[in-house]
Image (cartoon, rainbow, N blue to C red):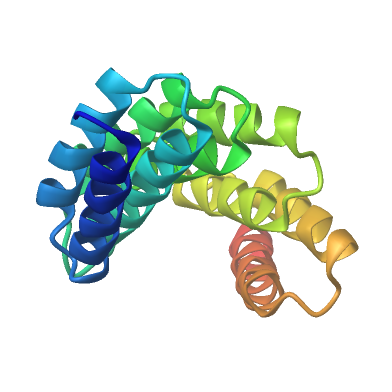
Length: 174
């Protein structure tokens, strides 16, 4: 890297590769740039954005690269320790891997940073629902709905949990 024009060209190349979903190649360039320019906010921000995009791509049900996604989001938490989205996405990867306790802990960390993050509250509800702790799940869905009364995911999940609770109560009385 002789000058900043070379760096700018490499940044543009990395962005282009990211946009083509050639994440690994983009990350190789960005890692090299970050090693050379560790104090560059631009390089750090593009690196984090690329890690998020790649992690999101891998964290998808159809891709199922949850373990790799977990590594990418963990890396973001080291680069940007106060990024609630990194902890949230890391929690999703753990949830997808069946690591429910770890997912809860990470969602909790995200909520420490951003207490009104409705998606995080909703996902905590999903964790508790998965653990068949329906009352706790209901509590988190309702907290998400306090933030956004029209939050469709939480509305649907709350209705479903209420149905499950009603069925359990019916079974107890029979």
